[in-house]
Length: 268
Image 1 (spheres, rainbow, N blue to C red):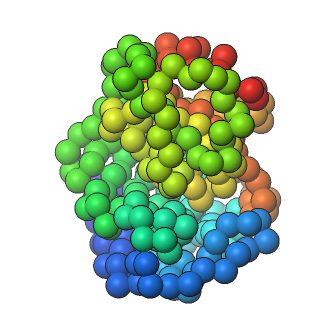
Image 2 (image 1 turned 120 degrees about the vertical axis):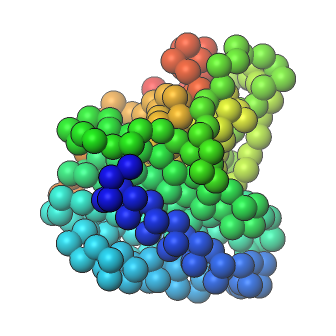
């Protein structure tokens, strides 16, 4: 790994670990308020967002930042970090130990590096993915706690898992061919496909900060990312406000499963 990418990985790891450690004492202890879009926010979200933005500005002053609790317009910079300072705020406030910190690094509007850290369960994920960014020289692969991960090669069965969010329940036709799991964190729903734990997942209303880091990790691990709208997600558009933009998404562990899952979804 060259010096630039080693620096990126070290920065993401150190920043996410620092923020996660500071958030753990607030786990289950803070009150949430409701934002205009119906999602919850706490003082912990706001502190984490500011801490990550400050760290990026100090280490990479030429990089842009798009964050859930801060700047929502995509900047005109070569590199941009998209951050979710606390993915899974409802879990965080209710005492369910699946919540995380998500960082995605975009090159000309397309994610090429993702880092997602889940402090209560001790799992950290990162990955590199060229996609259609035009970038070369990345150290390709996806990892959990520094060990390589890959999506499952298994065939579909009723004993395998499929993840979804509560807003996605109405998407599914029944009977569904897998066991359904609802974990409460968009990035974790997607990343469990990368680890091989589940065969697929669907999210009805994820925002750009929910998906930027996981988008890289899923595909670097061999998974398939399928937008459920005709408009492509990336590259992001300079000057566009992404605060209200939703990106319905299907993920699957391989391309064959995409065609098996799609007939069970009510949207295209």
